[in-house]
Length: 85
Image 1: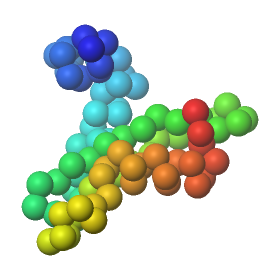
Image 2: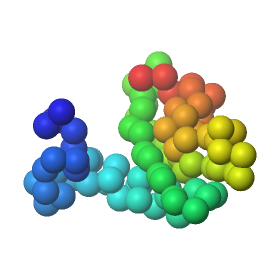
Image 3: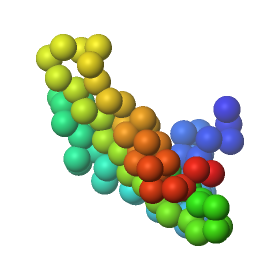
Image 4: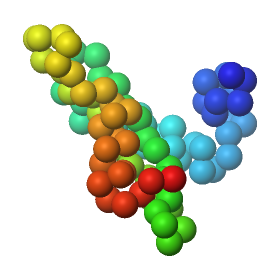
């Protein structure tokens, strides 16, 4: 687990691409809709080799089991846009 960027390494030791993803995930939490904002950012690639970053924020309501987590939000958005890697 020590190879997860930003989790066990100082932010300054990350590559520029990794720093950009961490900053994007933090920004995504601003769009979360619930009491404890969570954001995520995915770097994805489509079939032509184009790369794109997708953000997701969690969405919750008072009926707790009915939620959309930040990761699912970003993954489904990426897949729908044709970015599956």
